Amino acid sequence: MTRITLCSLLLLSLCLASVSPAAAEPPRFRDVPPSDNPKRIVYLCDASKSMKPRFADFAPELTRSIQALKPEQSFTIILLCDGKALPLSKELIAASDKNKVQAADFLKKATPAGATTAVPGMQLAFAARPDTIYFATDGGFTDPAKLIDAARKLNENKRVIINAIGLYQLTDACEKTLKQLADENSGTYKFVTKEDLAR
Image (cartoon, rainbow, N blue to C red; front, top):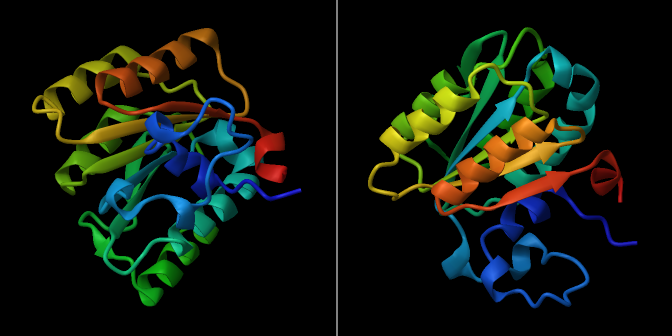
């Protein structure tokens, strides 16, 4: 069976409007029209204690997504760990081979811990001046209402797309927050199971 990578799931949100409802599976990265590709990307990712048993699956998929980026794109990763926002770089960096290796090492060394406080990470993400943010979490972040309010203020001009990705198991309240975050910021919400990543 064709492997559905996290990259495919992330980028599905950028072309849902043009994908037929009868499509069997999302397009691969290379099949997404260049005009639909984001140019300036922040991966804002949960690395709290609850992610510890999941990070071994998630990190390699995120690495594959970054490996698929094109030279004209730029990116950074921000991990939400132990109540802090830990960036690979506070500024976006070119999707060069060197920086992709740096990103892979950054993820390999990450140790999920503590609680997820999302607002500082969202603030840091906007400070990098992206056109697209991917927020991935398994839920349980401590500041859902504050996150929605922060995104509204930070994205008042609606220039940044925020896509939300729910990982593995979510409470109804968390899923509602992620859907609202995506809906209010021209993005897409996607729920990803462990089986999705394994296929």
